[in-house]
Structure formats: C-alpha cells, structure tokens
Amino acid sequence: MSARDAHHLAIAPDVVAGNDGSGRIFILPGSITRARKIAAHFDDTQVHRNPRRHDVHTGTFTHDGLTVDIGAVGTGMGCPSLGIIVSELRALGVRSMLRVGTCGSLQPEQIGLGSLIIATGAVRDEGASDALVPREVPAVAHPAWIDALGKAAVALGLADQTFRGLVHAKDAFYGREIPTGPLADQNARYMAMLESAGVLATEMESSHLFLLAQVFGADRRPISQGGLALDVVMAGAILAVIGVGEHWADSKAAAQAEDRAIQVGLRAAVELVRG
Image 1: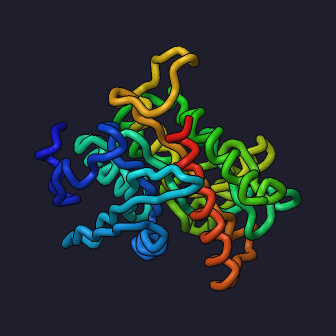
Image 2: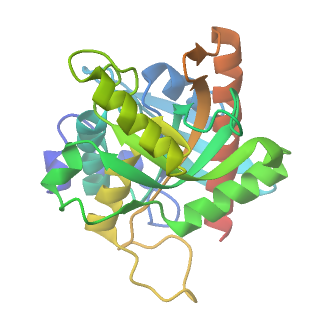
C-alpha cells in the first residue's frame, strides 16, 4: 500500500510529516468529537476536512520545553473502520499512534468509573485482524508507549486511579458486552470468563491497532536503541472507564474521565519523544 492509496483520508504525506522525519505522533480516538477536543490542546492547529467526517487535525504540543509534532483523527467505531484509518496513516508516513478511548470495567471491585487503563495487550475477540494473522499471534502494545503512559499518569498525579494490563476488544457491543439475542447466555458466560482471567476492561479497537503496528512495523531493535524510528510502528492505548457492569457514568463524569485520558495521552507523546 502506498501513500497515493490513502483516499479515505484524502490527505497527502506532507500533512503527517514532522518530528525530524519520523512523522507526527497521532492520537486516535474513536469519536470525531473527541478528536476535536484533543486538537483543542494543540498549538498552530490546522484542520484537514474530510467528506467522511474523519477530519485530520494537526499541530504541535509543548511541555517542559519540548515540542512535538502531533495530530488527531477519529477512527470511527470498531476495528474495520480503525483498520482503514490506521493503514492509510501508516502508508502516509505515521509511525507512532495512540488510541485514546473509552471502555467498560471487567474488574468492578478494583476498577471503578473514571479510572484509566493503559492497555498492555488485547484479547482478539474481533474479526478484522484475522485478515492479517491467525489468532495465535497476540496483540500487544509497544513497550515504549506503556512506559510513556505510565510516566505521564504519575506526573499528572493520576497513578492511584490508573491501571495497566490486558483489555478485551470485540466486534459486537450489543451482543457481547451487553448480552442480547439468542446467544445472550453464552456471551454472558464469555464475559464472566474474561473477568475471572484478569482482563481489566472491554472496548472495541485496540487489538487491531496493535496487530497493524506489529505486522507492518515490528520493532526488531535491541533495547539499547529507543525512540522513534522510520521502520518501526509503535502503537499504544489509554482508556477511560465509563461503564462498570450495568452502571454507566453520566455525561459530566464521562467527559471528565475522557479529559484525564487525553491529558495522559498528550503528556505521554512528549515522554515518547524524550525517550
């Protein structure tokens, strides 16, 4: 796939260029509204309109004297939509991507509404990544993102409400997470199994993001080499918990949790470049 094939985003490679040739760091919420909220934190912001409403926001973000070239675009709901956006960003030259999303807790005794989760890997309960590799290949976040997100959460005073571990990525919100239909009992047992296995939360996009990065930009460098690299695609995810079982955060509480996830994600982008 080449940059000229990125017709869904309808942008050219120069839009995503930056960070000394390694490309802008892209923040990937599912929601186009959240993409605008993220971009409100940028300096020198530009908006590249898209007929499919996947507007690409670009700019810079500065913290502690370090400025990074950054971007944001909504990927839509689910892995198939994310796969199109991420594949085209990669073809255009993006090498570092962070999902900033929402999720439902699978550990209600420990992880409540408003908590944050740094995804270290994802259960592949979705079909899009099956087109890439068989199920035996795990979907894992890049360690540099996990480290950068952890540092950012600590620096922002959010360590006590930030958790780190596996999440569950699914295709069906209604059916799997919210058991409905003829397989409702089977789906409820499956979700209970995930809880028993220690999976922290359930969401809809992280697994495919992690697999795309692994398949098209695996990091084969020794640990003595870090930072951004032209031939390495690094993907991570920070998720705000807005649901616990049948209980959902109200709009104000959900927005506050999203804001915390955005703050951690932006600070982590700086930590990633700082290395």
